[in-house]
Length: 275
Image (cartoon, rainbow, N blue to C red; front, side):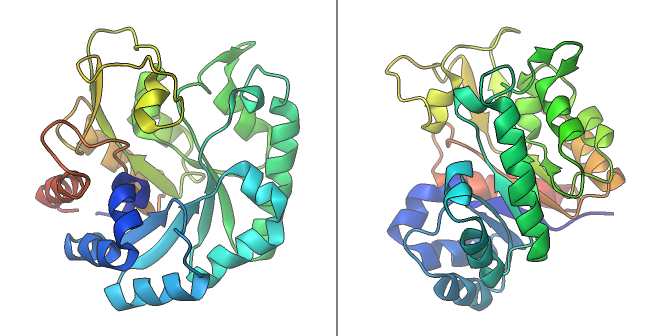
């Protein structure tokens, strides 16, 4: 059994900036059945819905910053519902909102509120993790505390399997841990030199703009199937966990490839596995 495959459009964000519609068409031509948004690049919901319809591709979900959701919960969620999305994911937390920091408890309360508004509009809120949630709060990881605190109906997982691995856990096992609460699973591959993760990892994805950052030799995102991840095990876990979609994401193209080439390589690899 296989699941439909979407592309997180952050992976091709520079192409999206140049030509939104043409890029979505190219993604569909690669064999992706769906897309996950990371911004609408000034397009209206009506325009985006039309672009997806013309490309014959599903609008699966969207990464929407927490502050944007808090500024207008009902209106923001309604925009993505109009496009056709079934899921909205909080993609990232600034340091003060993370597990172990001052605003973590408040952040969980806010996510529960947004999750309730999503449910009201027939949608589901997800949380997309990095590795910083794998900090122990007592005996438990912050990520697990998050899901224990906010009920499953208000917050489901969008486990990013790269960051689960970087956080020190087995990605397939972690997907299975959240069986029934893992409707969307992120497929992300990487290579990392040594067992210690380098500093300034987020500079690689454009979040930490400090000049010092991990070199590509120390850490590099790779097309799915060309890094260290056991993708067959992760895919099997996604099916067993009851996922509805898997989503390819590559935060930065690796050396020698463009964003679109990386997306194509990932899709081609998944096709070799019957996905």
